[in-house]
Image (tube, rainbow, N blue to C red; front, side, top):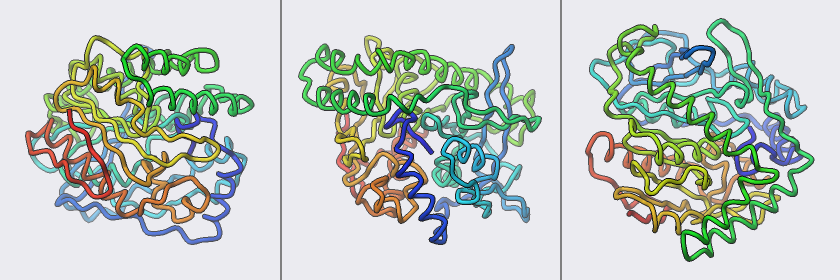
Amino acid sequence: MKFLKYIGYAFLSLLALLVTALFLIPQPDKPAPTGVHTVGVTEFEVTEGNKWVVVTAWYPAKPSVSRHFLPYMAAYIAEAISEKQKIPASWLKDERPSFASIDAKVISGRHPVLLFNHGFSSHAYQNLTQMEELASHGYIVLSLSHPGHSVVTKRQNGDLVFQSIPLEPEYAPQRIAAMDRAAVSMRSSSTINDWIDATSPLEEGLFRNIPAYVDEWSENNRRVIRALTRVNLGAISTPLKGHLDTESVGVFGHSFGGSVAADLAFSEPNIKAAMSLDSYVYTHSLQDTMKVPLCVAYGDVAEPPSDESMAWINQTLFETKAVSGSCEVLFVGAAHLNFSDLNHLPVGELLGLTGSIDADVMHQSSNQLLLSYFGHHLKGTPQVNDIEGVKMVVY
């Protein structure tokens, strides 16, 4: 429940207010996927030596009479967040069935693959409704859980691995002030060297571990990409055997996970496109140019206690290094957490956690952006540049 905007150091008092409100107000219905396919979900583990990554996969499925559906928030995730936030797990748990049928059969054919990376100190299900939407339109979406960084990871043998990265909340005010200063300087930069100078403080001092974290998460993505052939062959047992289009792979993420997607746009030749949802692009990731198109989506509403949003912070970078097909997109009235499933909670705006943008518009427009962008780069369909509630620059 903590995302990159505060690098895992969100205001605990605001979050406590949020979950209190959720306890008092019935949780709203989650949006149903709009694609033509029903949705299946499965989990598997990728191992290389002593390294491992747990993957949750949503995919287009054959209609099923199964009564086994993934819950919106399983008890073990709620309990892990509860331990971090010191709030009752019962306030967070949502075991209502989602639209994803567990281990349903995949529809025939091979389908494009999208890897998703969650925000720092969050979990692989944070954008569950978005995963379902993409799967209903024919994508296989692989959401990575990063051991030791995710708030909790459940291994195939049932073991729970909790976050071990220290959050150091006592330094949150200094970090937030530094991020605000960086955002102002990044937006006002006129040359790539100015932009690099403005961004570099976010990888030094209190942020000195960020480059190593980016590398670790990016390598987890590469492990999964390398494992796609094994999944297709059935060497890793899943319902996905023979259904992955390994020539059509994209990566996206929210917050710190979006920074990882940007890193892969500069470094990973085995993907075709990447998208970053309200995230920094770190100087550590930069090379002479991007290897594949990258699209960055921003909100323009700052979340308390920050005074600055991320709107257009990467514009100078894109004007210098973007390859054809890249884009920047501003969601007018959106805050950082509108890019997650917290968008669907009506009390979010009252507490300053989400922006003034209508939640349905945010859900529909962000999904339209993802489907249009990845459809263009992975399927060859026309890209839609006129989306409700957004301003777009295409490179």
